[in-house]
Amino acid sequence: MFEHPEGEPVLVLSEDQCWSLLERVAHGRLVTVVGGRADIFPVNCAVQDRSIVLRTAPGSKLAEMAVNESVVFEADGILSDQAWSVVLRGTATRLETSAEREAAEELNLKPWVPTIKDFFVRIRPEEISGRHFQFGEHPERELGEGSEGG
Amino acid sequence: MFEHPEGEPVLVLSEDQCWSLLERVAHGRLVTVVGGRADIFPVNCAVQDRSIVLRTAPGSKLAEMAVNESVVFEADGILSDQAWSVVLRGTATRLETSAEREAAEELNLKPWVPTIKDFFVRIRPEEISGRHFQFGEHPERELGEGSEGG
Image (cartoon, rainbow over all chains, first blue to last red; front, side, top):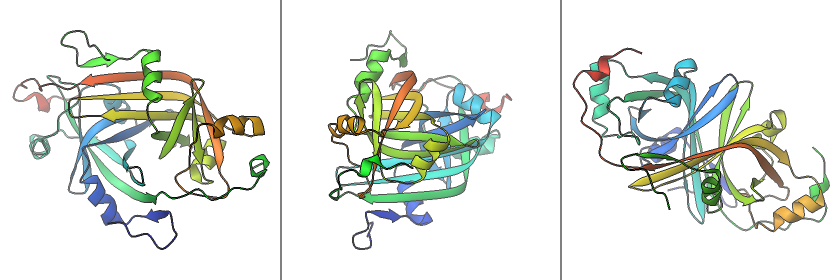
């Protein structure tokens, strides 16, 4: 699926390639920032209409998204010889209407913490980027290169 | 390994349990914050003396850690019936001296992008927290609970 130009260990993925990878994952990580302090939460997730839908119990990630709706979502897949990572930056909104919730119910998402009360959150993307890494041998390094400043 | 009190889906892990999980992973995610904007990078990693060591090629994560050395590191493991996540908050420092680099070399870490010039970074923890999730059935929800404000 990922053809690298010869000798290039890193391939920058197209938007289509990023979405195609996200469609295949069932979990990722949500990063929130409040007052300059980041938090990260593992979440289950699904793709719907090129947005990410999460389902969550009440708690700190919901509270933090209410304070700052600008979030980052990451998913990755790491094998022994290759890896990929997709990062999506966007705006998180709680799904409030019955119609929105019904559409999200179809994704069959479950929050990790069973609860009587839970919430759907949709992250609408503003930026999406991804990279695919082909692992190879580490080139020989010269002695002393670690002493350089910078 | 993780005995939940009866009926409790979430177990808060002890510091020892968190480190024992981190010692078994080879990759995680590094979150940096610059100017209130978070970035997230998948990284390979190893534990050494209850700190996290990364090896990285030059690039944005190294630049961002130079601007704000307060970082968050996350690793998780997600199976069909259970999951865990450990989040470590700490200070990132580039290893500069030959002695530091030699100690880090013993970890046999490789950066994902082969490069002539690479860097070791150590994250010294200030806080570590972890949770283990035991998945179970989602309780029946009442009709109309999604319409509540908040």
